[in-house]
Structures are given as C-alpha cells and as structure tokens.
Image (cartoon, rainbow, N blue to C red):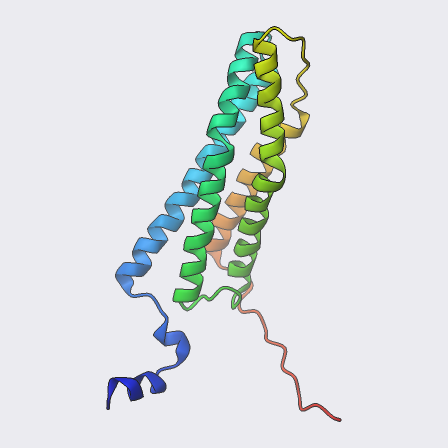
Length: 184
C-alpha cells in the first residue's frame, strides 16, 4: 500500500492527532500558561488590596503604577498562550474542541477571560495608573478602585473551575443534532 493510499484509509481525526512527545510538550505549555495566568491574578489581587487598604498616598501611587506593568500584558500573553495550546490540544487529541462539554466550556471561559482583559481591564488599569501619575505630580486626584475588585476575584475563580473541569471531565460528549431527510 502506498503512502497516498494509506492516508485515505486512516480517519481524518486519527491523522491529525499529536504524537505523545508533542502532546506532552503542548500540555506542559498549556498547564504552565494557565498556572502563570493564575499567578498574575494573585499578584494583581495583592496590588489592588494594597492600594485599597493603605493610607499612604505614595504606596497607592506605586502599587497602581506597578499594576499597569504586571497585569494587562502578562495576562493577555498568558491567556493567548493558554488559548493557543488548548486549541492545539483540542484539535490534536481525542477530546476535540467541541466534542466534550468540559472542553467546550473551558474554551468559552478562556475566550471570555481573554476578551475581558482587552475589552475592559486594560482601560481600567490604564485609568488608575494615569491617576497615580497625576497624583505623583502633585495633582489632587481621587482613586476609585471598585471596578478593580472583580478581575482578581472572577478570573481565579473561573480558572479554578477550568482546572476542575480538566481533572473531573464531567458531562460527557456533546450530542450532535441529527437531521433526517428533508421533505420538500
């Protein structure tokens, strides 16, 4: 049997599966990027809590400027790396992207969290960092950190849900809608 004819006998899903070394490498990237994502969330929480609970204006200025440096771009990088490696794992393993509920939900969680970094968090962090720079320059400013409470609360919660889904793998396969013959 020639190589060309052999490829026709192997199902398409089996042809695109990752080898064990490749799968392990991508899985390590996926786990490491999601762990880093969780770590950045913890660092963000520490900075926000510090800024919200201190009476020292210098500490508030410092923590909000640090927040701008250590959150948005690292979170975006972690989210995209986790998304990319997850898509590769989904396409290259038996789990698929939308074959099992737990994988599909993890995909949606990743997309939502990554989109929130771009659509919301970056603007709020930039606004607070700008206020911190103005305060450091001697301008009277007020800080409203209320909107910054949600990201370090929601993101780690959803990441831990995704981790749990990866371990437990609940709900089974997504059923395909079978369409009968169309009458016409």
